[in-house]
Amino acid sequence: MKQYKLHIAFFALALLHLYAVFANFPNLRFFTKPLICLALIFLLYKGTGLKKNIDKIIAVGLFFGCLGDTFLMFQDKFVFGLASFLIGHILYVIAFMKQTSPRLLVKHKGYILVVGVLATYSYYLFSVLEPSLGPLKIPVILYIITIALMAIFAFTRKHTVSLWSFIITFIAALLFIVSDSILAVDKFVAYVANSGLMIMSTYIIAQYGITLGAIIESKKNRL
Image 1: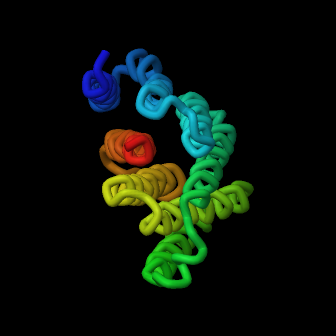
Image 2 (image 1 turned 90 degrees about the vertical axis):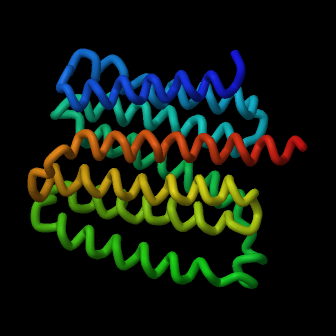
């Protein structure tokens, strides 16, 4: 099957899942949700061959995303879902760090603004969530820090990867923060209308963007 057909098939799966969320079809939702990251692992494999360590790390990160998706379908497994996504984000941080040049960071200091904005937002998000966290306070702090670092290192790739890989991956990282912020506010603070649809649509685009960014960079390196 040609590469573009695989991407079309993925979006068909994504739309089917979003329809299940919108129409409140729990059986269909339980079936399609774990398939999202598994399908992305297959896309990544077909696009890169998983020959480089960075691609392998991202694939394992996607696998932990699949575990997180599965755990979060059960109300009493939230901590396991949080831990799975935390591991996945740590793996993304490692992958993006491997594409970051400390020498170029000294020369190009635009990342400092990104760090400031993400640090400010992370502190604000925690301040909103903190009164309702209870025993989850420390795990949530670790998660917020990790996902902010993931976005920061997605930006620091700017001068070492292709333009499109940088843009797509950085936007994906920001969408991950949007998705997780909505989820956290809806769970710990107050009901958010249509939260399920907003969380999953931004999450799917985020995971797809990280996958696509890796595929684009892999193809550039093979030219």
